Image (cartoon, rainbow, N blue to C red):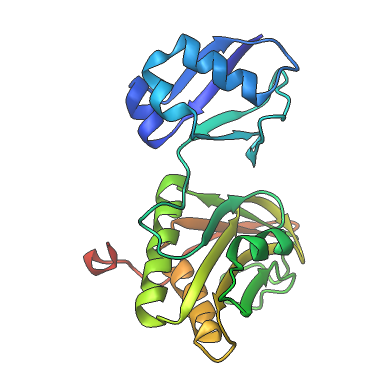
Amino acid sequence: MELEIRLYATLRDKVGKARISLAFEEGKTVKELVLAVKDQYPMMSEGVDSAVVSVNRAFATFDTPINEGDEIAMFPPVSGGSDFPHPTYFALAEEAPDLNEINRALVRPDVGAIVTFAGAVRGETNRDGMPPQTIELEYESYSEMALERMGQIAHEIWEKFPDVKGVAIIQRVGRLAVSDATTLVACAAGHRDQGAFEAARYGIDRLKEIVPVWKKEISHDDSVWVEGSYVPTAADNR
């Protein structure tokens, strides 16, 4: 089969285009895909070993099989490295957040408390200009910039709440039904009284302000894109 792969950030720059294609056998795994990419696109060799691979917009492992029609993307890791002094977990996700996975990413020997804010889809809006009842939401994002802004929010949290250790920020994308999780912000600290509650509140407020994500409220007979009131300025850039 002919496989198309979407490239982002440095991987895209190495090739000079946003998509590549290669002949690939159905049912082979992500590990074999990485080897094939290195063989057919040697200019990517330096970055592809550490790249994140997604299959149908879900993070994949080396064992994930690839089938005809799958949507494949490769991009550099979003978090980690010297730019982040504490553990982080950032994601734009189609699936609901896994709290156990997030906690495992943030817990360290000096962490004894994790405060989590989680948002959900409301079925009743009761706001001017919005459908009175919502059957689902549709979220769209400018993904590369959204993930960068999540990293910025983490840095802002550490500046304002220096006792906070790890930070997790998750934004759902795609179509979500009533009661589905929409957002999650988690902040870890040594104790519950070391700013974790305040940091989580700050994180969700900033997520609504500077992370480029848009939502459409959908009712039985109408749909409306929701626009925020906060307009970012140059001061919001880091």
